[in-house]
Length: 431
Image (cartoon, rainbow, N blue to C red; front, side, top):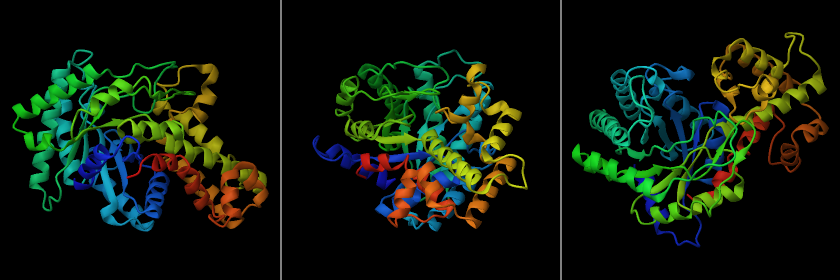
C-alpha cells in the first residue's frame, strides 16, 4: 500500500541525524487497547497501524472468535468512534502462516494458512507478514530456510490472487518477511541475553526469499516487500526485559542501509524504555511492534481501578469477589492459555497476575471477567471516587485530571492508562 511504501522511502531518505521515520504497530484485539491507539493517533493527525495475529483472528475464529472481516469491522467502528479518518487506518496481519495449525501435518497446515492469508487480504488487510518459520507435525526441527522461503511464496501467491479477485481491490498488499522472530507473547524461560541476527544471516534470508519469489514469477510482489523481521537483541520474559543495545546491532543496521526499499521490523519491543525505542527507530527498525505491553498497561490500570473501588465503595453486594480475584479464579479454573508458560508453582500467583508475558490478555473476553469489568466500571461511574484515591493509585491520571486534560470517568482513566504504553512508540517514530 502506498502509505507504507512511502514511509519506507522517507525513512531511507532521512539523514542519520534527522528524526527517525517509522510507525508503531499495535498487535491487540482488546477494544480498549485499540481505542487508545486510534485516539492517540487521531489527536496527532497520524495513521494507526493495527495488526491481528494468526492465532487471534483466522477463518476458524482464532481465540477472539473473529474472522478477518469481523476484525476489520470491529476496528473500523472503534476508529470511527474516536475520530480517526478511514484513510488513516492501516490493518495488518502478523505471523500469517501455519502457526495456528502447526500440530498438524504440513500439507494440512499450509492449506489452511493459504485460506487464512487470502481471507485477510480479501477483508482489506494490506500489510502482510509472511511467517512460515515454524515446523509442523511432520517437519524437521528447525525447518530449513529454503523451505521457509518456498512456503512464504505459496502464501504470497494466495494473497496476490485474493487481491486481484476482490470486488474492490484497492491498493495491493505490502509484505514483511523474516524468520528470526522472538516467541510471540514473550519468552517461556528466564533470559539474560540474546544473540543479534548477523548481517550474513539477514543477507541469506533476503537472498533466498528474493530467488524464490522470482522463480514463482512474483517479481511485482517482491517490489512490495518493505521489511524483514530480525532479532535486534530485544525480548522479555516473565519478569524482566532484555534491553536494546545499539552497539550490538551496529553491523545489522549497516547491512539494511545497503538494501534499497527495505527496513527492519522489530518484534517484542514491549517494555523497552523510550530512549531505546527511539534508538531502534534510528537504527532502521522502522516498524516497532507492541502487543502484550499494551494489555499489560491496561491490566495495571484495571487493577488500580479495582483497588480504588474497594477503598471507596467496598465489596459489591452482587458479587463476592472483586475484579482481581475474579480474573485469577477464572484463570486457575481454565488454565489452557497460561499452563505451558508458567512452570514454577512457588511464584504462580505472581506470574498469573503480573507476568510481562501478560497471559491475562486471553481472558478479558471471558463472560465472567467481562461482567466483573462492567460491574467495576458501572460502580465507579455511578459514584466517582475522590481525587485523593486517584492520586494514590493512578498518579499520572490524577495529574491529567487536575490539569483538565482528562475526565474522571473510569472509561477515560482506563483508556489513558493503556495509552501510556503507546506514547513512547509514537514519540520514537516521526511518521
